[in-house]
Length: 306
Image 1: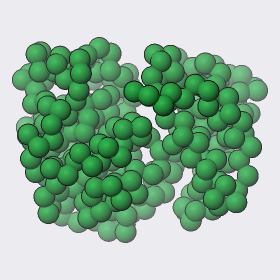
Image 2: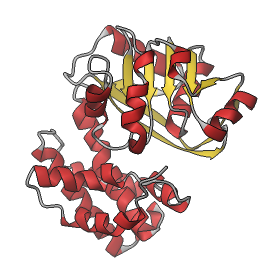
Image 3: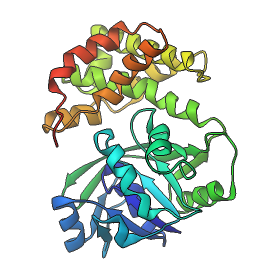
Image 4: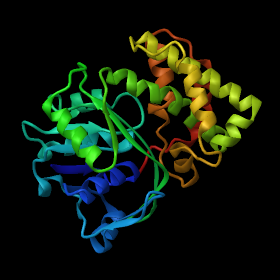
């Protein structure tokens, strides 16, 4: 399978490197020091499952140099998503699939409106990783799972081929009959947990160990679940309890990507995380006072520039 990874960040780098390691023709899109390091020394993956360096690694900042592919792994921050989606157009052929692996619940809609209405799938990734240095991605947990599917819930030869490629690369892959539900099942924990950890400047362990912060997290999760249901997402009756239980089981020293972005002075995806809970809640007439307050606390820290 011919694959383009937009872009070679933590999630895209892990998925793309494992696909390349298993024999697929993978091209990475990157920029700046990260791109130069990959070109010079390959893409280094550090993981509890084993370290390896993909060298040489095919990397560029120009999609037109890659041309049409079978699969685009679309894993960018939402600040860059609209421009990145439009930049994907040279990668598209009639049979190309675009698989978004992003935070938030609006990636499929964005791809359908910006670049790839006939190509876009829904998707969600479970992988803990960071860019440790230019050209180096560190996976901090053993799990690496992708859930994806078509908006209409049907499978297809294209979906089956993607699943086979991911599975063959050692990535747990599932085709979801209800991809909206799968995406929201992650979001109802991710968005509140990211906001609480960032607002409190605290690890996941510190949040769940504090009665006040745990209560705040629980209330924010309940708001996200209510907003999802108001939009027609078939979340389970115990969705909120399950999300909180997952937080309890996370590594105590884990930091959400939002907190990591805050600590390094990067742009924050708040508008598409807890901000989306508030925004969609207002549209659907669901009260979200806890998420509204978290957004108010984080708003002065949301950088608009690059």
